Image: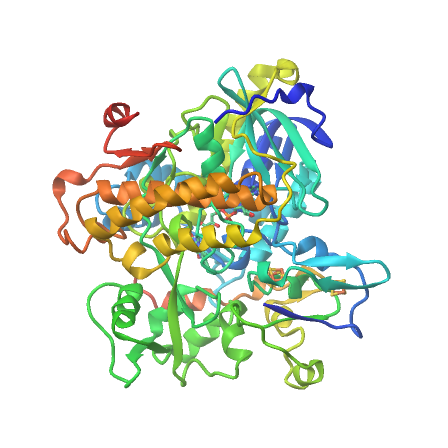
Length: 529
Length: 110
Ligand SMILES: Cc1cc2nc3c(=O)[nH]c(=O)nc-3n(C[C@H](O)[C@H](O)[C@H](O)COP(=O)(O)OP(=O)(O)OC[C@H]3O[C@@H](n4cnc5c(N)ncnc54)[C@H](O)[C@@H]3O)c2cc1C
Ligand code: SF4
Ligand code: SF4
């Protein structure tokens, strides 16, 4: 799909910039990457689709994080991760992530972030309100001299002789193009939740996955994506922790219980009809703790509901790879398979950290900090080896994005989005998977992919690329879920309910026109067209 | 979704235009910003934090219009309620050290 436009000769971009390191996406992973690349001596540009500080899942959601000091607390945290990971977690990786998180949380405190103190005087660093945390990081970035491009989605990578050499995109506000030539690029564009409405996920359409795949990168863990968040009906607020103290009932008031976690109970209830919740198990002290996260109460306070005594109706919103685990394959240094390209946070596969279960509630935030830092430092080192040469390289767009396209085919675009969502959002697609349904989805998604390609020159480039990225991500998820012929964690194959000890490895996937998925790189070579 | 930009409270600083993650507002010369792309609003409430004058109101309903009357919201104490609860004022977080979230974790045995 490589475009033949030579960007050095092109005057398409109104804004032509050069940096050692370009970071794409300004959630926690991208902020830490930019900060640490800058500290390593690199010049850094951070390009963000929305606004650095309010965009992404952490900004709107929250950031429970694993604060585990070396010794007994660390060992306990690692053991917990291993138990929840169902065979895919790597203890050495968890240890490194938690060590890095511990160090960076200490640095945040040193820089003046005011963490709360528990009544007995112990400092608490186990959670930060996302928007507080990111606003603080934004100030730090500015202070350290990182150039921030807000409202500037990246739309495709640039490559030079097989090495990633920058990216280009469009400014949302005036539609003007921008281009950054860089010695190394960090993809930190978060996961993909298919515009389900889950809190903070509007911008998380898998753009970074698409861009990286166009440059030749591939994925792991796309099967561990059967992840949904509980929210009051018609509301975005998928803050799952409070439902730990919930009683779920059906319309008649009968309690819905059963095996599994909170999401399982709600999903089981939704199969038979409507589901209601009341947070009646929360003690006054726990209730006061919940008030620490005021977004939890927006749906209640603004609709006159007392969630501790009154039943309210709930639903499940798909969170895909945001609180699921699939993402780009990275090495321990966060390098992708493509030279010059690094990945951090939800853009990278989190199997080593979260395994087969959701990484929400701590593992993902910790992963974002640690991989953010590693990718920043390693990208800076990579870029500095290339040095001044980089600005002279001839670079090409790797994705054929049409930055100049203007939109009139909005109705067609909406139809393609609905078609993608039909194969991803429903519980009988994402939550409970069967071979028959997955096969039917695979066929539907082949058509959708063509439709999404056809849209590329007929609507505005930002939306066109978002739709293509969602179509591609849906296909990697589908192919991976078909390939894992067992149930494990958040891959629930109702046609194969057991876990097979032989299948404790990762499922890799990739490709654009022709999709592949397999248990090893060897398999991947075989199935390549 | 975002339902209200209060003409009486807005001081036309355009911070919300810049800080909305979904580019929902458009700036208008010498006037309060307009809600230009409501369908893109992700119902995150964050513009309310960044508004220095509590001039914005986000309805928790994400998938349908939810018309509001400013006077009713004021009387119900809802204008600026999110910012107050978060300890934000003047577009800055000032309440991180008073966040009692840890109390939830005391009662969990994860
Ligand atoms: C409601 C909710 C609550 C959560 N709570 C927790 C928790 O308590 N603990 C925990 O561990 N995990 C939690 N998670 C998961 C956690 O939020 C994510 O793992 C975390 O945000 C990942 O950080 P990130 O920087 O990789 O991605 P994000 O924070 O999602 O940031 C990605 C950024 O990339 C930008 N972007 C996307 N495409 C482009 C593009 N083309 N060009 C430029 N920029 C782009 C986006 O706008 C966004 O700002 C929660 C998730 C949700 C949805
Ligand atoms: S609620 Fe969020 S997305 Fe909607 S207008 Fe406010 S900041 Fe923008
Ligand atoms: S942030 Fe508030 S005061 Fe400033 S322009 Fe927006 S609504 Fe008006």
